[in-house]
Length: 181
Image 1 (cartoon, helix red, strand yellow):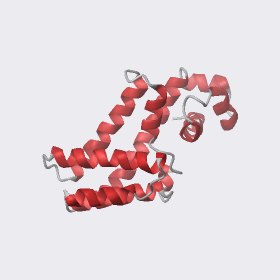
Image 2 (cartoon, rainbow, N blue to C red):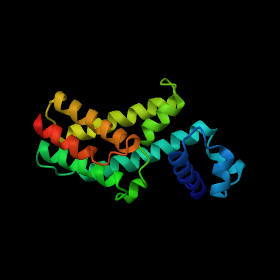
Image 3 (cartoon, rainbow, N blue to C red):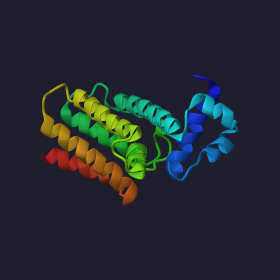
């Protein structure tokens, strides 16, 4: 990957995550990155291709972070503790790899675009499936779909509540709920 391509992706991620994919135009990305339009189009066929590259990078960073958070959890209860404490750290801005918390980039992007059949929305769905799979594998490979469903739905709820309602305590509530189950 060329440095200029990476600069475009990094700049676009920052702007898209801060302001939304629909409100950020190519010219704003070019101005912020200092990269020429011709160079952008040498690397990306258009804005959607850039959005996909940004989503792919965010997916890699997020899943690497999550894998590290969950790695070696000796029990299901420890998976729950690590997951939701990790989310809490993200919400509070203590996860430098994920940056300042602005909700889930995948939820935000999918909701903004609205077309659930688009390649971008399909990638957002892929990300959610991969995160679910990662959590499921951390549960020791047990075939407990009900527990996995509960964890994943509560995770999504905590992510939304932390951003929309500014409820930074949502992860703690999720841990309590899952302990009760």
